[in-house]
Amino acid sequence: MSKIRQIFRLHAQDRSKKQISTLTGCSRNTVKKYLYKFIEHKLTYTDIDRMSDHALEELFCPDSFLSGMNVLNN
Image (cartoon, rainbow, N blue to C red; front, top):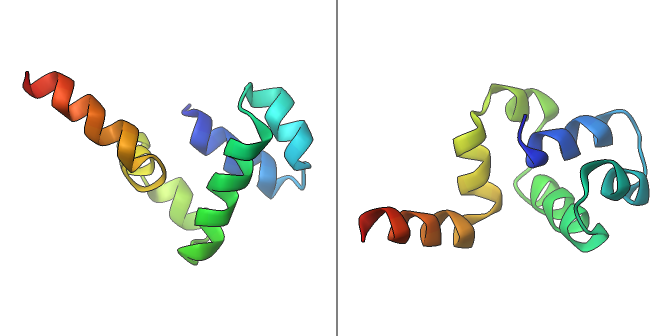
């Protein structure tokens, strides 16, 4: 399971940002960033469950996704 998906599952379980950070190994700022984007895009937990890990990465980490694509293309 991707870290992004894990963050949203823990959030759906009413875990705090600090708990999510500890359990996933992501910084609290990263957790806040993903949750902000989740709200900004008006997504539901059902939407997240239906998305592939690849689609989640594209939506929530476009910079790292694009840099990974550049490595693959070179």
